[in-house]
Length: 210
Image (cartoon, helix red, strand yellow):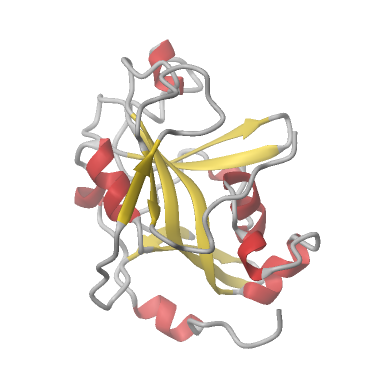
């Protein structure tokens, strides 16, 4: 997988960070409109980033697949707080997953980032994910992308409208087909079509080993 990053770090930093108003809307709208924008983490070894190509929406108290359906707890308080914050949790005792909080303060809702198209810091991603043989495998799943971008539970509660972890607006017009399908890896509300992905993208998620 040799070659320079598709998006140089200098160009990445010139992209506008999505403001809190972007997240202060209904979760489904936020989920769909995150597609095509760039998740950016400024790490100690330099920037790492990828365009968002797949997400899932989790809707709150009435969505039994959502952590927030259990109500306000020490774990879920981030979900009920102001929009534009990170919610990071552990699955299978191994993989950490990044969610972005949506909805107005006091109403729970979040978007799980499921897959990215790597654009910046690819060599550093490879070092942290040596098992990835192809470019599409680097960030092809919620547990894979957090490893590749250096995101962990220490980022839980972080404000993503500023600081080291942000989402940046892709500067060119971006019009493509969005595919809605059921969420994966859940048993409750499993038929709800709340998984949104970029049609025909080769970077959508791959199954995670358990």
